[in-house]
Structure formats: structure tokens, C-alpha cells
Length: 304
Image (cartoon, one colour):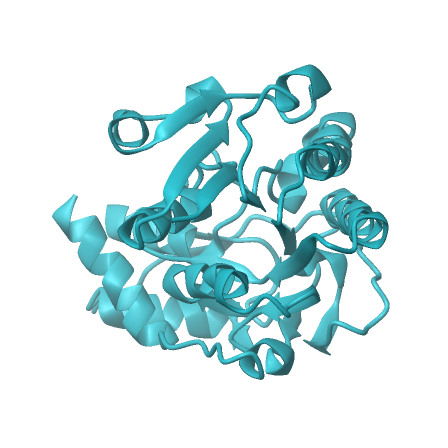
């Protein structure tokens, strides 16, 4: 049994990851803002209310062997609303977590970064120069440098950074969110609303299912030689138009659905998709095809 701490543990990825870790027999503690926790979290895990931007609360967290640092202020649009809070959470918060890990002799630190660090980039590779075009991407890149620093000064600690592309899956919260592209479109179609598109239908993203993301996150627990940066991506480019067409097909919409361009925003790249070769070489592979994953999400909506 491994003792695991997940920051951002009440979030979409954190909850799915915690479920898989628990099924494997590990002791899981979730760390998040108090208002994020639901009865599900309290009934299944040890939950600790914590603000990662406050070093005093971080240092009072329980000792553990593995830390998954998933907590973040997410989305490019959300960051534009409060640049200082974005920087504090994604950069200073990451520094605080890395210092907690060093002080408590954590064996493995796994950091969830983002495709946003690349900016506009086709077939993005881990060795590519980081050219973020949004404050969110800048703050996540800054977090990466703190993880790299932690790895340099604590060579015995396994440090893995995952640049996660557009993650989607069942039960992804979309209310008030500025990210979760596929889930937002799915919910709009399910409710019979107009589909709101930010900019051109020819913009594209790399969509990766939550099961594939959590499988990647589990890999360093088994492969202790993993170190450094890895893309978690499907390796496939999907245009916004194709994504919406797939959803309409799954929903069996025979009548025309209104698609409205509500305008893009500064810092939102036209397109990005990633090369996943490095992670595939570690034995991981994306298993959920986009149509199948979207159909799974649609079924979950119908059963809610």
C-alpha cells in the first residue's frame, strides 16, 4: 500500500484518479478548497481543506510517499479574469507543494501541467521551446520550472511532469467553467441549447479521455525510472467542426442545431496537438477512441 496525497483532489481528474488508486489498495488523501468537496469525497476518502497558496497550511499536510499535484486555476479565460490569482495558484502554489515534498522526503511528485505551455503548435514534442500565448500557459510553464528545480536539488525524488491536452469524460462539471470543450458542447446539445463556439470551426484540439489520462498518471508508481516531462495526448488533431458533428451524430439530431460564434479571446490558440511517442515508449497508449468516449459521456448525461 502506498500513501498518496492529491492536491485538487475534488476536481474532475483528481476524483477519477482517487477512485483508481483506492481500487488498487492505496491510502488516498484529498487536498482541496473546502467548497470543492462533496458528500462523495467525504464518504470515500480522507479530505483536507487546504489553500495551496498558503505555505502554513501546506506544511501541516500529512506525510506521504506520493504527491499528485493537480490543483490549479484552470482555463485560459479564467486566468484572464484574475492574473494575480492565476499566478499565485499555478506558480506559487506549485512552489509551495514542491517545498513540502522536499521537506517531507516524498518519494514521487507528479505534476499536472498543460498543453497551454506550447501555445499554437502542431505535433508538439516535450523538447520543443515553450511559447505560451496565455497567462494560464505562462503560469503553468512557471510551475514546470519549479518542479524542474525541485528535481535538480532533490535528485532522489522522482519528479514527473505531465502536459495534459484537452481532457474529457463522463460527469465533467461544466457550470461556470471556461474549459472542458467537449463536455461543454455535449451539455449544450443535450439541453437543446445553441452550441456556442469561440472563433472558427476550423480551430483544432487534441482530445484525450479521462481513463487514458488517469492511466498515464498511475504509470510512475510502477516505473520508477520515469523522470521529466511527458505529453498526455491522443496525438490526433480534431477540428471544432468535427467534434460538434460527432456529438450531433451520437445525439441523433436530425433537425438543424444553431451554432453561434460568440467570439474568441486573447490567448486562446488556433490549434494545438501533441506527439505522445515518449509516453507510449513507457508502455502507455490512449485506448478510448473519440466517438466511443463521447458516446460514453452522452450515456452518462441521459442517466443523470
